[in-house]
Amino acid sequence: MDWINTLSSLNWLAIIVATLSTFAVGYVWYSESVFGKEWAKLVGISIKEMNSGEGMAETFTMTGIASFIAAVVIGSLMVATGTTGPINGLVFGAIVGFAFRFGAHVTHNGFAKKSKRLTWIDGLHDVTAMAIIGLILGTWK
Image 1: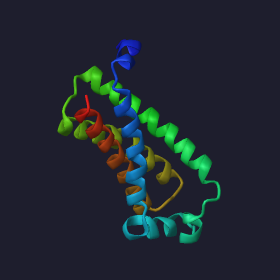
Image 2: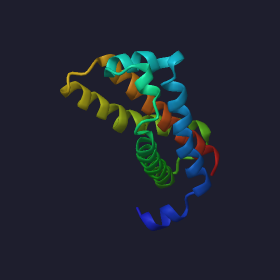
Image 3: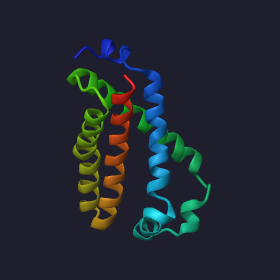
């Protein structure tokens, strides 16, 4: 795969929108009405701590960088495999999410003796976020 040509063929506006979509997914996923209360309990913090602004600038910056890299890699792999269209993009992103992101949660949380419920919450969040990246990139060629 010629990475330079692949990267130059990406729709960079779509990459930015896909990157930003991960924040929307996380906002909903970890809201108190969805998984936020349970997640906070499982990681041992209070809702107040979860919602505090302390240290969040760095967290959001690092999350944005990681999400941008994920969108670029998913986009590049979609180009390399000829994956196009919203449904194919959604499925492709979900597969990448399950293979790499969910799998990482299983491995790390398993060895750290963390709750299986925490693994499912965080892992499925990542699968959903990666699927939405694929959906956006597949739709917005």
